[in-house]
Length: 128
Image (cartoon, rainbow, N blue to C red; front, side, top):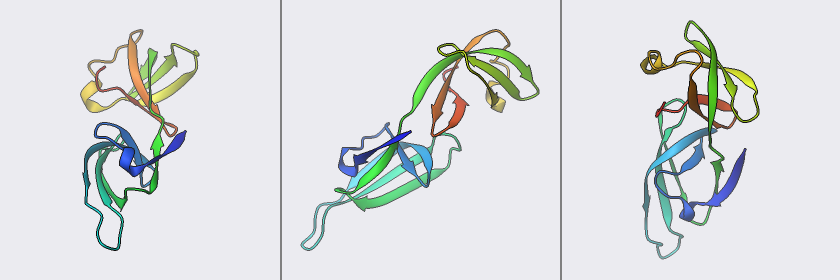
């Protein structure tokens, strides 16, 4: 799920879609309008799910897509290797998520964890 927003309304720390990937905005720089053109904006962002650095340059008046990012809670049902089976605490749906290396000791069966979902992708919330 996504919505359109004008580039001039973007803020650092918010989300934006660059190259079909949900990203967190790290910096925005805007130039002044010139004699024959509109003001431009350069948006530097980092991928929410892959950690890659991405940038976007465009007119401040252009529209860009912004993902709808949701933070939810789930209970860990089982852990098999580096994959955890989770059950959402709100609608009780079950799904599987790969556990990152740095969180393997923190995630245990039966515990409640938080996760982020955007554009059909799911990952553990870093604050877990």
